[in-house]
Length: 152
Image (tube, rainbow, N blue to C red; front, side):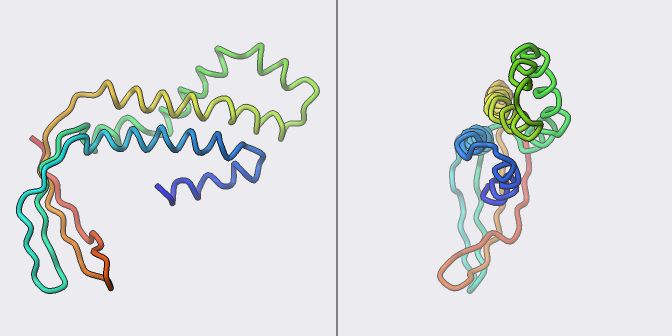
């Protein structure tokens, strides 16, 4: 998520509010949390610097997230928002530069897109999945090196 937030810094440089980007990220994070809505940690096996952890997860399947949260989805949300607010956009654009108008549009649309993504995922069917996580010890931390998933 931090990489995604960092990738949005170009919008901040273009004048989009940091609060707007944080609100958008909060919605996306809530949508992602629905993947692991409920979980139960099963067998844990540690062999030196490698561990295997079995986790039973109930939530929105990852493939649903990948299928639904596409650039096309974002374009459709932005297009619908622009269509619904055309007069407001035209009024703002009068007397503002193209850059100011872009930043203003993003300040309006990104929170709406985030909420739409969150709602779409919340409406999705939940399924159970079994995850097998492989972790490697790096210093004092355990880092996930492989994830295998089996959906019901």
